[in-house]
Length: 126
Image 1: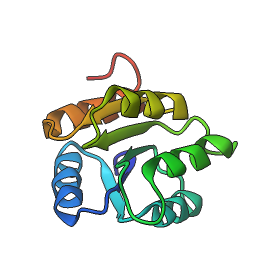
Image 2 (image 1 turned 180 degrees about the vertical axis):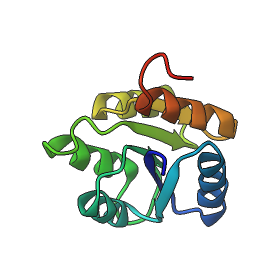
Image 3 (image 1 turned 180 degrees about the horizontal axis):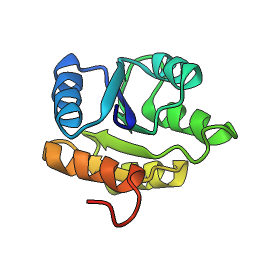
Image 4 (image 1 turned 30 degrees about the vertical axis):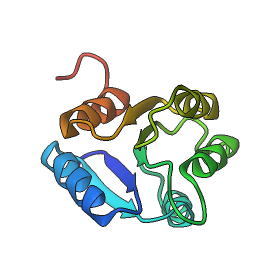
């Protein structure tokens, strides 16, 4: 079984696309449709990386990222933000909150897979 990736997005179609692409790349994928669900999954069994949307109901992706960075057991968990918010201020907020990558929708699924691979696979492994 491959490295575990948590996909967090309130759009089921996006979750499906990302899950399929990551699974085909050899990852084991779980998903959450909101921030609270994401934090529960992370607490139950830490994934190797998280792909996180920013705009979600009840708890934003930035709030999730802040919670992950505050906890010692997840402060270094790789997080890719994948969002429709493409403004400079939005990206800056993501970087300042501790995102490892900031990708804007629409983007190629291959770009998301490549970002995750880069963060979780040992250097030099292809």
